[in-house]
Image (cartoon, rainbow, N blue to C red; front, side):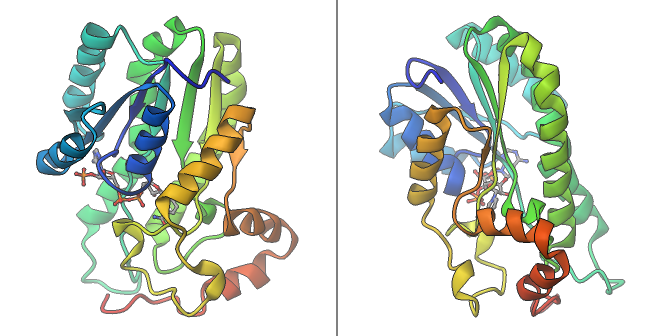
Length: 256
Ligand SMILES: NC(=O)c1ccc[n+]([C@@H]2O[C@H](COP(=O)([O-])OP(=O)(O)OC[C@H]3O[C@@H](n4cnc5c(N)ncnc54)[C@H](OP(=O)(O)O)[C@@H]3O)[C@@H](O)[C@H]2O)c1
């Protein structure tokens, strides 16, 4: 795996896992571009890390993604590594009529539909690259659903299956497909979930996740399962009901 002098685009790089990956790729002599919706969050990152390029761009907005494709082509000549990282997690109790349906639909749009959109529009640039890699950031919850976040769990398992399905299709085009399935990571996304009682689910620092990712990434590993995600993969196959119960001692989120 080529590990330096690459043009790397990370969606949702202004915080958490995306930011930790951006710092890792940048420290290894790559040109890194991050996106996000909130411009001031992006500007704060750029103040601290002037080498990281920022673009305000919403992954759910077709026109904004197409502008991003054109801007990157003009300024950098194209991407070599596309990291579909942007994501949100809503805690939802499906048994309540008062749920915000629009928010749940938006969650599917960001977490599942948008990686498909990003690949679609960046395909010509990836095909043009000698060392193209697509990285999809799904979740350990792709193996075992987390009841407090039912739509989220569905999007991540859909992303996992899509990633597996496109891997052999992109191979003839020399685009390598990598999936990162993080465990619980200490980021704003994870802070709402009520999982603290289980020691195995203690959040991993994002920088530690980026270190594990990097070691596996440069070795050419296709499915990267840090921390508890490795056990979720195994137990999801060997004892799916047992592991589902352990993970979901409290299926209804607080105040939902
Ligand atoms: N934290 C965990 O425990 C955990 C575990 C497994 C998997 N993951 C996955 O890791 C990825 C990163 O999550 P995180 O934990 O690092 O969360 P985070 O700290 O909340 O970061 C999410 C990033 O995505 C951006 N984003 C959200 N919606 C967007 C949109 N529509 N268009 C463009 N950017 C958007 C956010 O910026 P703006 O809000 O400014 O747009 C932010 O930069 C997600 O796919 C998540 O599902 C996280």
